[in-house]
Length: 209
Image 1 (cartoon, one colour):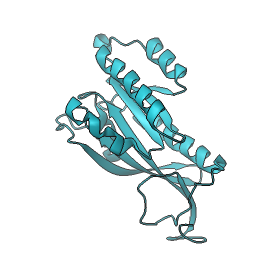
Image 2: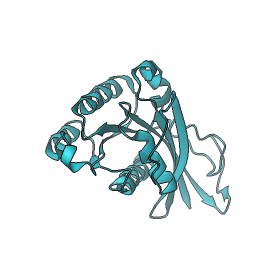
Image 3: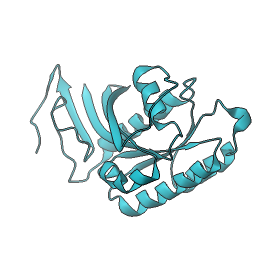
């Protein structure tokens, strides 16, 4: 089976539900009480797209302002960025726009941006309308998802869309810097999109070039 290893970073204000989205996808459960992320944490999660296994190293960054200066350490070398805001708090949507601007101007190479409006289950409290968020996402060439870590709305679809885009990018990318690794290789820091093909536990062909 072919394998693509990618690095994904999740950015957004404190309390928008970044950690809950990752936990929901990884464990298929919702944890009501989660502590604030300090700096960043990461999880390794997989997705299957046709005959390709996508190994996603997901970096969940802290939303507190005091940690913002650390963000470049985590989004450097990322292949995709999930920009998460709380549909019930407009200032978190404004913060997403600031993140998109920063990434566009500071990240080199191809980076998939995804705009994510979380907590759609709080429909009566929402202040950011779907059309507003969707139009903004379209303006930066990003897909838009409305999600709820609580009831699992849109979470699987969001990660599947990212995985599918990564597979497409890996299969069509002719950039000479693309490196191929054995599917179970130890270097999965995600500094570059990786595409390999394995047979059983070992890959066909060589390791890093």
